[in-house]
Length: 205
Length: 205
Image (cartoon, rainbow over the protein chains, first blue to last red):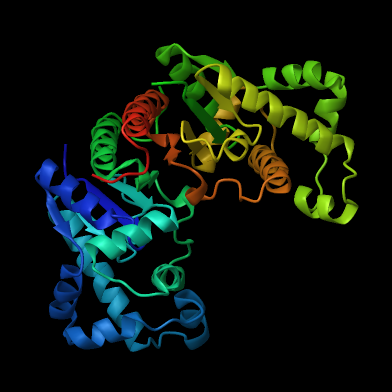
């Protein structure tokens, strides 16, 4: 059995990061999040702060822009492509959990990639953000919705898929069942999935 | 620990029915699908064939129509409400798996209800429909898409939710990992979920 990759996309405040970290730790595999930006920066020569800044930019569609402008790419698009290369390189090198960064889309053709989306009811996320991230503001729910909107806009711009659309993921899980429960379910799935990949993925029994 | 209910919505040909049947069998709980129609018919006095016929009917929105027409309800809407009553009655009486029938929406306020959506890539579903349902036609993939469209239209008409939208379900699962694997994951989730309900559902640990 070779490498396997678990990509985790998640709503803001759903605990997806903690779930990913715990799964990686318990499986003894690497965990990547913003580290990717650093790696991408080194790889491509872009300064890290520029990469972070251009990520906030939202446009109609990466592919539509490519179509319009031919081969000419904006800085943000070049950064995205540099990140794609980093993700593919990491995935070749070793098993890991990758948080965000459109990794599910980048690796969608790879049979050893398990795609996961974590979400939770808004009220529960507000409680989590208040208690864990120490964010306390009167418009907290709106703030959370805005974070999700930004994540969706970034993902929808750079991929042909829709962020959080159930069909794009092997598993979508509501973390209101508890963080520890999610970790266990995810580990179970990895076990099933690795077995499936080893014996011919996609086959029914 | 009291009753618990697992609702399963599923794409056509995803194997969601078989998964539901096996989970129910292995957990030793009841399984409901079209039986509901019979029960609803008996409960409400509607003839079964009328119920089946009106289910095909697609309109803008149940709630919009209620708003427009006041208290006046069409036959299909009366049938839907009769089915809702049956679902609620069953859920009160004993633990069970309920396939389709907007049961996730009907029972959405109940903490002992686990909502599941099963999907799979189109090519795999076409293989399944050909082999298991013995449906073989040149336009098979279009036929499958149409079945999904009908299910979505029925669900979207009678509920405020969107069929297959990840946030409406505790678990969305891609059955390309294998039917047996899905059954095991679902049973694991039930175990976690029942533990969660018993110790205060929605709490994080």
